[in-house]
Amino acid sequence: MKAMIFAAGLGTRLKPLTDHTPKALLPVNGKPMLEHLILKLKAAGFCEIIINIHHHGQQIIDFLDAHDQFGLKIHISDERDYLLDTGGAIKHAARFLQGDEPFLLHNVDIISNADLNALYTRHMETKPLATLLVSRRDTSRYLLFNSANQLCGWRNRETNEIKSYYPDFNPQQYNEYAFGGIHVLSPRIIDRMEEWTGKFSIIQFYLAICAKADIRAYLPENLHLVDIGKPGTFNV
Image (cartoon, rainbow, N blue to C red):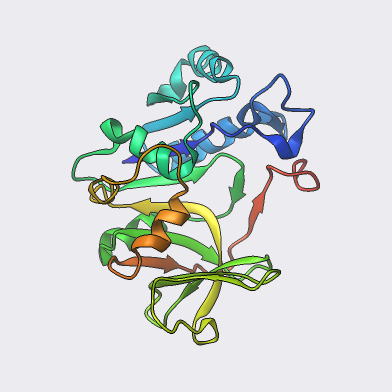
C-alpha cells in the first residue's frame, strides 16, 4: 500500500522552533513527528511512502538516510524550488502515485488514534474518488456532507462564508464535519487535476469537483485527533 506524507510546510505557527529545523523533525515525546507517522504507517501495512519536502528539506533527506528509510521504500517529492500546497503536491508527485492502487494522504503534524486500515478498507469497499477522515470536533471551518456522506460544500462559522457549486445551497440542510488531515484517494483523481496547475489546495479542489464527483466522509467512533503543528498542542 502507498501513502504520502505532507511534510513540506514552513511551520510558521511554531516559529522560532522551525527557523532552523523543518516542522516534521521537531521532537514529540522524544521522536520527530515524522518518525511517529512513518512507524504508524509501517505498522498499518504501508510499504511505499512519498514525502514532499521544502523548508530545510535536506535535513529530512539526511534523517531518512540515517535511519535506512525505516526499512521502507521512500520517495522524495522535491518542492524546494516552489511550495505547491496540498493539491499541487499531489499532482507534482503523480509519477509515484499513479497506478491501480488507492493511496493514503496524511499531514505530518496530525497525531490520532485513527485506524488507518479501517479507513483504507472503507475506501476500497465504497470506491469513491476520495474518502476523508472527519470528526465532530469544534472548529471554525467545516466541510458539509449530505445524508449519504457525500461532500457538498464548506462553511466558515466565524465569517459565515459558504462555498458550494450546488445551486440554492442551504448549509442548514447538511452535516458539518471537521476534516482531520487524513484521506484516501483513488489514483483517478490525478486525471481530474489536468487543468489545475501550480499551487492549489486539495480542499479547494474537492469543493470545485464535488458536485460531479463522489467524495465521501468517513466518521469513525471515538476518534481522538490532535493538530500538533500549532502552539498549545505541540507538546502532547
